[in-house]
Amino acid sequence: MPLTRWISVLAALTTLMFSHLAVVAEAATAQAGWSRTGDMATGGMSFPAIELPSGQVLMAPGRTTEVFDPTTATFSRAGSLTVDRGWAFSGTLLHNGKILFAGGQAGDTSLASAELYDPVTGTSTPTGDMSAARSFHTATLLADGRVLITGGHRFNFRNSALASAEIYDPATRSFAPTGDMNISRQDHTATLLVDGRVLVAGGYNDLDDPPAQATAELFDPDSGTFAPTASMTAGRGNHTATKLRNGMVLIAGGHSGHPGASVASAELYDPATGLFAPTGDMSDSRGSHTATVLSNGTVLLAGGFTAFPYTGSTLASAEIYEPSTGTFTSTANMHTARGRHAAASLPGGDVLVAGGESGERAEVYSSAVSDTRAPTITTPGDMTITATDAEGALVSYAASATDNIDPDPDLSCEPLSQSTFPLGVTTVTCTAIDNSGNQATASFTITVLRPLDIGMEINPWSLLTPKTGGAILSGSITCDRNTHVYVFGDLTQTVTSAQVTGPFYTEIDCSPPRTSWHATVTPTTRRYVTGDATLSITAYACDQQGSCDREEHNHAIRLRNN
Image (cartoon, one colour):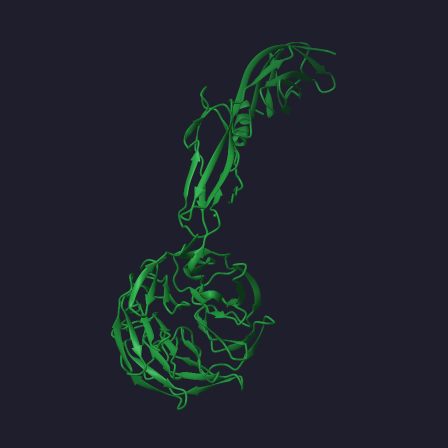
């Protein structure tokens, strides 16, 4: 084989790839804020989160279900639903402990089916179908244990918002129509009032008619009918409606249309007067967010989008509504920006948020986080580098720190990245400190080696192989460290005015200071004979750090018989 071809083949061997496992170090105050939890197994958007009597939370992102255990802050797989409900379906915990899942949008299809899920056994069985396929609807548990389903969206239908409503009766395991709403709605809210009526507010009446609705109405479970009530001060969809301890309903945020910008305004509905009245504005305009009552009666509002659908920013911000003053106050940001996520109350007053545009990530808000965990430091692992000059090598490395509460812990490493590291082994020590003073350290080493150096020695005598007309070449390779060496070239001899040429190739593992080699060369034409010949030889090697060296020589050697 020609020398140039050997070189091109072996040049591909010089590209080496390296990966280093993360090195984790851990080492320890109370504040309001967010702490990371284990991730969900499957992420999703607009899926239900159900607070179980055990204190755990069941989440159903599509067909699978998983349970969050607040004692371990982890999710575990539970049972599966009978069908894939996609997103925008409802989940309602019944008085008998079962969960009613209804509707949803799977691909291009809105669903009419429903099923009962048993969180104890992790099994689900079909129940009666709804009278209409719907997604982005509401499901409200009434005082008598029945479930009111209102409005929603029929995918691929013009004027797809629905005015129909129906009631699920657990005793008969079936749905029955009730009176229609006064207007078609989707992405609206339905809130059970203290007196047993249901306040239905806002939403989108027609996706071809962008402004969101300001209208509201009341459902009377005794008569099964809806009656208009006063309108909100602003049209909104994908807003939140939260019943406060005083019986009033906080309406907050939402989108002004479909599409439309989000709003920061909020208002209170008073069931005694049937009127809405403005309250303080939120710190951020947000829609498709969550609102959860905390143990002290305040309300946590988190995440959302600044415009709909998905044309604005996704928010990580959160704020607290104080009913006694009618004002919102910013609180710590979430670790992950998210909208169309799920939220649920946990025992002790904490709040779990999960999923949304953040995928599988989840976190917990607490008004009194006890931060006793040190940050986690990730380093590149031990590194070996080849020196670039007599001083050593300029080395760049990447280290990072994360914390379950502090979104940006301080990190410092010594020696610094992009410093010149001398020949030999240097230990790099990294220190991370979070805003509660918890500290962690991690270290790794950087070894700087001299460039690879190989040499070549040739035996001036080579033996002929009479049967093949070839020759046996030999010599030794010198090396300054263990390395794999490729030896190749051509042996040429002039025999009666004609050139006899043959290639040779061999590989050896060289150990310092030297390792011998042998190679057999067979001529491509005629035969070698005793006498002088010219050896063109190359030795080529690269170590694991990508340092390479090459020796090339032309030697006159003597061929002889054994």
